[in-house]
Length: 236
Ligand code: GLN
Image 1 (cartoon, rainbow, N blue to C red):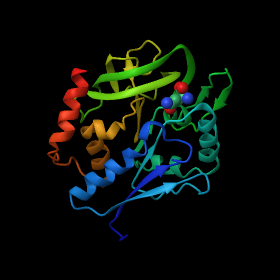
Image 2: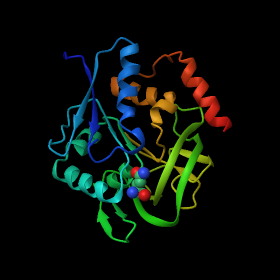
Image 3: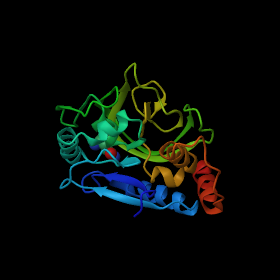
Image 4: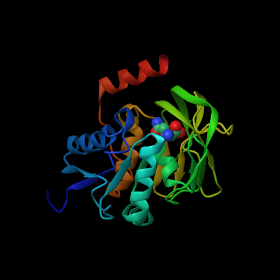
């Protein structure tokens, strides 16, 4: 590792990482390496304090009990909050949206204080949202449809400081009747899309990387197999 190595924080993969969400960190690393950057994934587990010095962070989904362990750890070691406050990009998948929010209710109805980084609250809905989700992005810099697989019981309501990542065209998304999927607040982007999300949505990966590198945009990488997969998912 050198001074210029881009360091990607994979936060709590030991408790947060359903459906291969750890793959998001690998996608970021690979897209950087293909462009000639040195890049490393730094795994931060429950045994480690959370550093605030990394260049970008990703967090995956989890079941309620694992989600609670992660919440406690992030409250105890506020490196992620400090990094986001400096503008470092953070990608939060599914349960991670709930953990980074103000509070969430578990499926047994218990309310747990979140990390408080984003203005969202989450409560269980009558019906589990499960299946493919497709959306039209609302975030500037994204134009292609976003696709992923969702599986969550929690429905997430956005407060005044947060905006939706995208508008749902198929599937459930945040699940509170506003037609939105995901959340954007400052440098934090959250989504219910597993898949992993960045393997399925290269434009979102490159938007995060451009922010991490402090450049306006990155030239696209031609990857026919990714495009083929996207076409299949959009048709299915
Ligand atoms: N436990 C949360 C819910 O069901 C998140 C699930 C997930 O990350 N897949 O809402």
